[in-house]
Image (cartoon, rainbow, N blue to C red; front, side, top):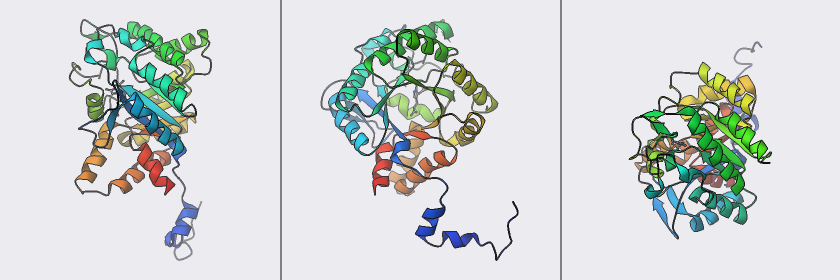
Length: 330
Ligand code: PBG
């Protein structure tokens, strides 16, 4: 299209007032775009602050329920649970991961009971239960793929049995989506959805999260043999395609802000429900700078989350979800 030159075209005409800007804004944010990741711990009536994520707490189930209720009232459609597991329950084979009474499964049941309208998403990966801190089973120093997939399938079934609406495999093993989908179908869980962490990069932005779930101390080495290399984009598209073929309903890019180009490419290439995870380190950067008075935290929060929508995402996992929703409510 050719554009008539100045002064026929003056872009500033449409920026002159809030009303004109509202009318012409291409992308908008609503509470329905948000998924709220929450950390859960055992015990009663406690909320421990996570030092590397100011403003975020690990909640006991009794404290989690009113918080989830509030999220639902704000219009947030889903929460995603991450358990802080008692170190005494961590083993080489990660058996606690598929214990139907583990913390995560108890929390899922409690939420589905108290706030049935909110979708509950769970994390399918072994790291909270692993003595090594890795997302997979370690043998002779190697994270083994196929044995891990077998464990993940058991874990996914236990989560589905507990009532999880969305399973989020964040482990980056090969073949896990297909194995889970087949097992879910065989078990009659035909309506349980899978949001695959398809393009998950080996990122230093996960540091505060590992503190939050108590995996930092345990982790030996890094996750570069299974998570993606930050230099790769074509590989992300191949992974998304593979996961869709294997039975994923939704796909995710993670981290978020440094990987907006990947979000856009995934959405353009496949047109499927696409999500980004604004991870713990992204939260910590914004919150930390805001707490120092160096940036306007609220405005940066809103701008950063809107950016994901502009990049093609259908939704965003963000620790800011309740604050964003409150701000949208006015
Ligand atoms: C692990 C998992 C991680 C996150 C979500 N699931 C950390 C990792 O891969 O080490 C990171 C989330 C965040 O940083 O906010 N299965």
